[in-house]
Image (cartoon, rainbow, N blue to C red; front, top):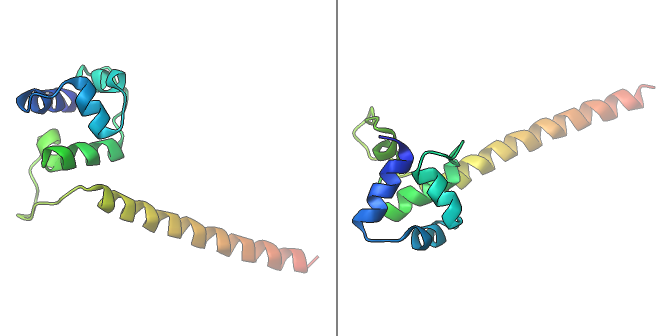
Amino acid sequence: MSIGFKIKKLREEVNLSQENLAVQLGITQSELSKIENGRAKKIDVFFMAKVCDFFKKDFDHFTGKKSVNKEVVSYTIQTSLAIIIKELKKIIDENQKKDEIIKFLKSKK
């Protein structure tokens, strides 16, 4: 069963229209329709974090995979943002190092 179909099934279980769920998830009804019908080329991780949070399901529910450990991992927007911030800090650090090397090389001219 596809991720989109699972979203559709959960939506129908709580008697929400596509339009109402789309508003709750911050996307258009058209985008949600594509996801539910398997026509979306990619499903954004931030969108899936919202879906997991909205339906109170972990990501494994949508992928069909079981967690290796017994702890339930909550894929929230805050978790996703923490990962993004960590990656951005790495990029900034790398760029600062490159800038220092460039300055050093320029000073040797």
